[in-house]
Length: 358
Image 1 (cartoon, rainbow, N blue to C red):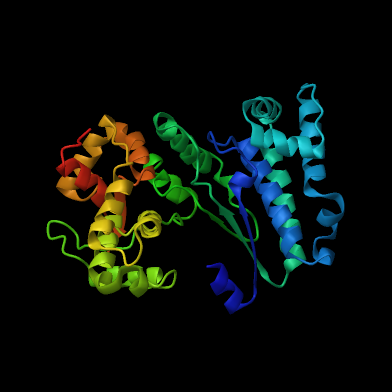
Image 2 (cartoon, rainbow, N blue to C red):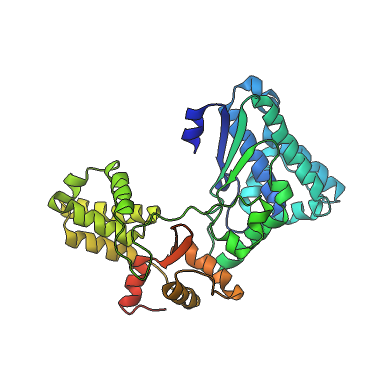
């Protein structure tokens, strides 16, 4: 998307990673979210734009601006704490103590959070005119939480985006949040809160939809092209390029991250055993990566529902939390074929068929 915007012209894009500003070991509160957005957007602007377009930010620094705002709110809330600009950044990355104090000070004045963040964004919108501002907030889908807490964290994030849509819909610009794809399941009203613009990026379709899951050549070919741009497939696989790539593509389920992990296992075997890699080596790589998956008993109903129906329409409301965990671990994959449909990850299906059922 960023490349397309650059080629098209007329746009200024700012991008930052949420985890550079937050510990991501728990769901963000709205207070934390506003400070993460303000800091990330402002620092991306100073890095991307000429100083004369963001003179105020470049001169004073966003963390000094955040400090003044936070100090004012804490003082009015009767909270006795004083933090320097860099201490606020460290506190955001650190954990629960600062979160509690910030929440205590701002809970009664959510309008001030919106005013602080939106004023900053409006300032940037004016500074880049006549270009249109596009903001990418990346890696809000990359939490580091124990699997037992996954459902609660994602439910909290779904509720955050739903209840505070007025704050998070930034004025005068296009904002793209990279969020876990299943947040829409956890809060069905989420799409409406953002004008219907909540999109799921499906996995690449490498098989046809069950009950006739034959290989899908177009999807497999697309993944082959991606791999060919990253390594010399002929040198790596020798005479078994096509069956090796086919096997890896099918076992990845079209999930690009898993395909990359499988290829890493293959390359590690190549370093140990030499070139070219054999089909037996490919199977060893699949076994090494697939065997690392953890199947929990609570995911059984989801796996069975997807296996039987190919959709989630029959899933009880109480199982949506388990769905979040299943999709987070890539136990279940989402595809698009005129409408959304779902399938159990091939590596999970392989484990189940071999008797490793949870």
